[in-house]
Image (tube, rainbow, N blue to C red; front, side, top):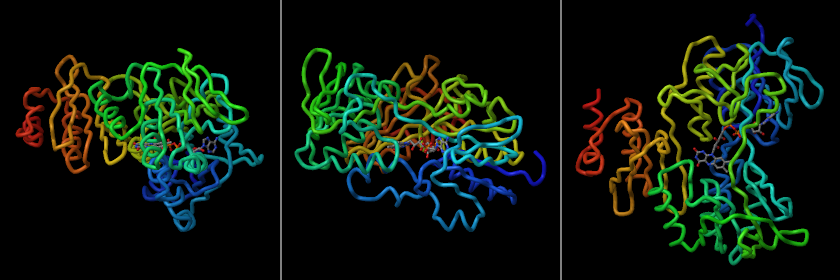
Length: 414
Ligand SMILES: Cc1cc2nc3c(=O)[nH]c(=O)nc-3n(C[C@H](O)[C@H](O)[C@H](O)COP(=O)(O)OP(=O)(O)OC[C@H]3O[C@@H](n4cnc5c(N)ncnc54)[C@H](O)[C@@H]3O)c2cc1C
């Protein structure tokens, strides 16, 4: 990279907004431009499915930095501005308004977008998806006591939306095609525990059901299932996963493999272009396979790694994944990748709190999922994260026994 060249970041979400901060803190004195398609100041998405739907806060209250931050840090924030093309030979990014920006190093942090359902009626008014502030406000406006809300998909977004709708007094039906909730994310025991809680709170969670179509005259009035049954609704929410936003990278000829493929330094197949956050796929050294993570902590961590490497450092991304979700009065915290486990060991950590440890075939701890009150699970999940990092093999009886301190097990691994 030649002196005087600019750092350009495409995508003003969690990762992009954090990356520009790390670039400045890391000593970059030259130009930084953040190209952000959304018109709001970059904001945190997790509250959208929780406090925003509950009407307790606005999306703007989740701004990652104030307007003054960008001004004072000399970050040229281009809000409402979409990057349209990357010319790798010329080292330029072309914007939707026709303007061309030169870069020395470029970070692509374009995130992901909800998958659409390919069934008749999916584009009817009243069928919602949730990714941005506008989506959350439109959905929140649908929630009122007695309104019937059909949630398609019992993944984390679907279950969080369902919990918020129930708390707003709605009658909620959750429709999931798989035989259980959270199929990709957690062991069956954790999913059962969460679904039981939803049912206790009044949500009608139906598993193994296939949505065939949405019905309504201009606006959704019912969801029709493959077995012919009809679920009447006033609004529907589709939460069936997300797809990485790779079009810009793909058209620029960068390697794509379930996201923009990056090396351990988060560099793409072009040495001057990095990718991070929900949009990138990387080989995690702990698990030895390529993966893409869709969570807040990963976006934060990867923003840091990518920005430091753009400045010439040699960081590798190896953080043990960590994720949380809030549903009703419950918190779920997950360290590692529980889905890689073959055995589950349960530890009761409080009256209504449990930590589920996932062990692989070699007896190594690969994941831990805490469900319950934050104060009763957070510590164990945090220590489990360190144990996972050390590929610890722990006697399942010790994991299950609340009297055995995980910290002591960690000390034995040192
Ligand atoms: C409703 C909701 C709730 C969530 N709750 C949790 C939670 O409880 N716990 C958790 O760990 N994670 C949660 N997440 C996930 C977490 O928010 C994401 O992992 C994180 O936002 C990813 O950050 P990112 O910067 O990679 O992508 P994003 O935050 O999606 O940002 C990408 C940005 O790039 C912009 N963009 C895309 N293409 C272009 C372009 N060509 N030009 C300019 N801009 C472009 C997009 O508009 C977007 O603003 C939640 C996500 C959602 C949607």
